[in-house]
Image (tube, rainbow, N blue to C red; front, side, top):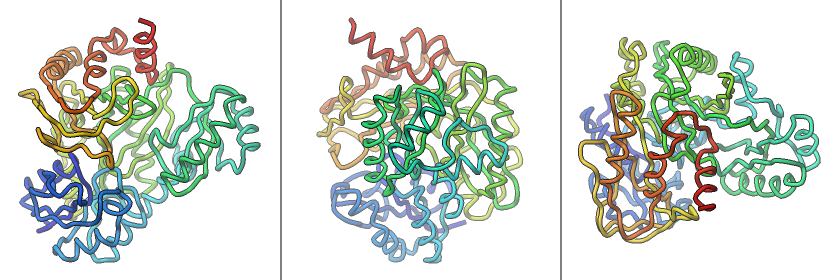
Length: 447
């Protein structure tokens, strides 16, 4: 096992990974920007300054991070999620520096990071994909032709990056020119490549993902699904394990198909395969995230598998425990993401936290407390509130109580939205899809 691991991240995931290191008797090493000098991940471990507040000059500063690893004597690097977690070049540089990269190989990251190549690879591995172009569309005219062939509505997607920022829904040809310019500009700005491709937008789909783990000894397992359909502008807000739309038979089908891709890719460590599930129960591959997901706690809650710990153990060469992947879900889990944002506009709300009270008896992954400065330079997520119950309705009741007990003042948060979701009839029935929050907002505006 490693003696020291450098955590190349910040915020709640850095704190979470510090806890995983402690559980394994590993000394965590962290990095921080000037803005994060007093943050828990900086003060709670051996930590190295990597630059000024802007992300590009600090948490994306590969040279500074590698120098911190060298100076600290760390033997491995855990990237967390976001930032450099799916940067194949950085993963390769970590390995070239003689360090262990805690995650899938640089080749696997690169292959799944190119969304067009990932689609083609998945299709070749026998994984169903959403109808779309097999290559990026080089110009607006090509995008128009492809969209007419596929049939509106369509989704424009960044070829080199995932997440809601790289996606644009287009209902008809009249919307396409503006959407194409916006999507290509965002793709260039956020992912360094303006290439986009066209994909069919399914009618009222659900977003369901499968968690996988694979060791270096030839064993790969899936740990079931997570329901991620409660989204705002394609960004997840509430996640569950399992999904109210997935029965055991569908769970096993999705899991086996996911493992087909993992084995074909030769991927080792943790990964998540994301799918759209249509009303008929058919599922379609979206992408594979070659990292730990934000929503991993709900899977941990229903499987009793510590995913962060197993990422480190696999990277250290250990085989998976034979029991992992063989037991059914234990109850139901729900996670709510608490953001420092205006609940109406959705814009970030930086500032200094005044009163912070967390619910008792449930898991809260956070890095903030009273007095914490919420910087405009970073993602506005403050915490993840995670509950577990004997079944879905028990878990919802537990989450509703937890949200009522949560108090955060000094900045605006999405707490009112989270509370309304737990009372929404469509959410309670389990029949919702990715349009739920849009419909809720429309109703609220009408009232």
